[in-house]
Length: 210
Image (tube, rainbow, N blue to C red):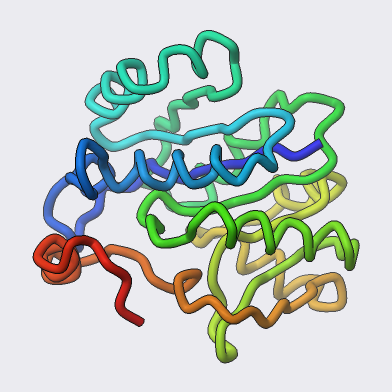
């Protein structure tokens, strides 16, 4: 079974405001688009876990309003990370606590990746299932992107990691277990970090530009 994780706890310091809830397309937000794309991919057969931290009350309110039925059925769960200021790895670790024993695979993506569409998620997960690596790291023209998918037996290794970064240390410790999947989607690289990036897409109908 697959559990998916959206890491959405950051303060978005480079944006200058909470970017997760910035408007994205009609009646949506950046985070909402990421959630909708993952759900539409129809690959999650366990839970979608959303890790929140900075301004968590606002994000809770938004999610409780938009995804009420999914939250009531535990298809989506929201996890608070009080240590989010200590780095991304704290969110990764807390996302892995109390996972279902049936979880075999975990998919990680970021809250500011609205261009990764349902078909991209589906294709990358199918590649993972077909090749059966311990870790799948997608790349576009040699650059690393998201989502990252791992086998659940690696959870104990992740809890032993130190530092502020995400899973980079894990990849460095066991490069022989990493399948670098070269795909044809530049969307896996694009995040929305700066206000100028957001305004560019806001003024261009949110259409992707490589």
